[in-house]
Image (tube, rainbow over all chains, first blue to last red; front, side):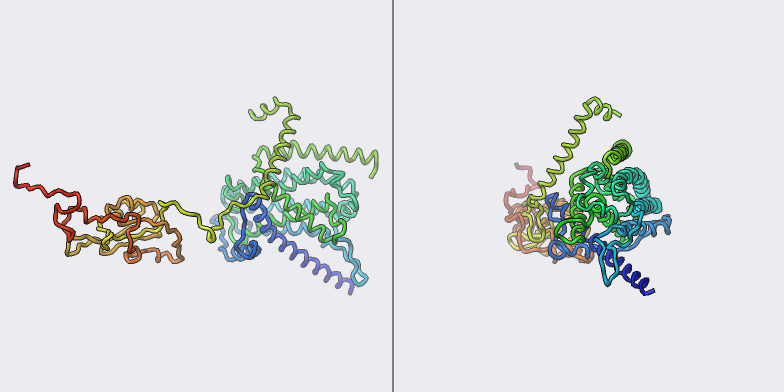
Length: 331
Length: 190
């Protein structure tokens, strides 16, 4: 009983810590994105609230909370109100399987530094990222607006297409680590991150995960200059903020997954494990902002062609090659 | 599709190579911009020098002799595309016309400058002052006392009543600058 209570307390503490850190970093990711993107475009970015605009996230949150929360006429009210929560929740839940350090020992108890070590961790991530599509599609549909509907439909189509190539690109990783548990995948990368063995899978995963998180070369669901703001056109206040939060948590999750699956997770010399993970997430985020500053949005048919005719065949070939090499050499 | 068939005529390997090269050169270009000085003008600290004819807040000027220039002819009010100027004309004992009251609603004014062009006496002029935002919309209604200034604005020497054929204390008919004596209509002599 005592062990049970202790385990429960540890779980709650871990949950609270991870949630707080994720939300805090997501808020400052917005700042980082605005600042870094501004420098790429030879601007200053936010620099009025606090030094270097460091209080900008606080100002944004205050602004969003104090804004009016509008529901358009003819909207499906229940779905309209739930949709942003679906996006934010699924994005945050995905972080629960990302390990941020080796097992810790406290008072003789072994504490794994991950919220939950699921033996099907990768499937859990895929399930949640598919569920996240519901937030976009339902939010777009429930708004009773043509722009939002178009955005929602695009979002659904895009994410179903890229889910496939994303899943297929990770099968070689699973084959090499012989486990679907994210913790085991990190353990398997001790000394040699998978990016060296699976550069093709890495590329496919980066492209399709970027499409999953609706970032700029793939931001067709929100496409400002065609669809106003796409699926969140009709949202205001903190509900819009939740969509926004979901997007930035998604960037973090993407960075975390990329770090965990290809870059060796928390493994790294000299520095503590947690710091290594954060550095990797930070670098991936910077890369994503760099991509945003460089590439224009794809056309819809280009998006579909890239997904179905390029990435999926490549991922399938990669699986075959990995299997053949595994059979011949053995890993 | 036309685009696709055009691409297929090209050596497809070459096409992929070109695409990858273009991708990397794009990334490099953006990265180089990271080390350039931002070109942003930080507004409240740095104010860009305005052109001389920049159009801002409207004023009513006076002539070099100290009298009000406005003769309340209603031309500015008539030409104003948003109808933000209103006034009421009156006449002084010496024959000069003036505006009994003069009102500009700056909440409607679009700073187009047509009133300045229409004004025959150079009374209404636009300044280069554009920083007069307020939180209360009613305080944008400027009365004559808010509009009237004690200088000549852009037109330093002009005094309408020195040229106008109107009897005032500047002189009788025919006594103004560049004016001929009035024609005696009762005589046929040239």
